[in-house]
Amino acid sequence: MDPAATPIATALALGAAAILKPTAEQAIKDTYVSLKALIKRKYAGVSVEQLEAAPESAESRSLITQELATTDADKNDEVLSKTRQLLEAIISHAPNAADAIGVDLARIKATSLTLENIIATLRVQDADVNGPITLKNIGTDRSPKA
Image 1 (cartoon, rainbow, N blue to C red):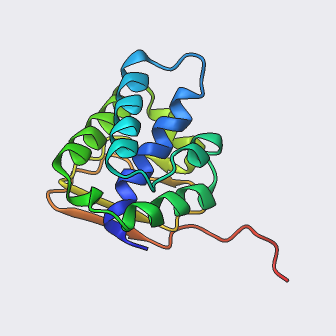
Image 2 (image 1 turned 120 degrees about the horizontal axis):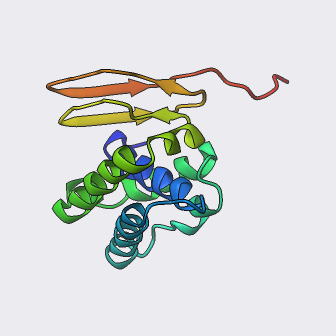
């Protein structure tokens, strides 16, 4: 899985989770719809619909991450700009949306962020990083063991 595609997939999952709430702010809805339309226009093979149906699903996030990894979305300035705008709107208007997918965005400031294979809730507070943040294989596997 391409870690560079993960922040885009995470932003889409957060946006999808946030807009499911009846009290979702218009800024989040507008930015999410804009990013989704951009992804669909530039990368027709990337399916956001499954993620929208179950943004809390690790499998849905993994699938969209894999699909994005086959594109140049992580190098597309317009996609990256829309992704940042969506994350900023969520941080400003619905930071608890992160709870739905197991990521807390509280007070993180960084120039880069990579998340991978998160299963349990991750919460980082008051982080001010002047470089990349890389998080891999976080959490515990809650599936029953055979």
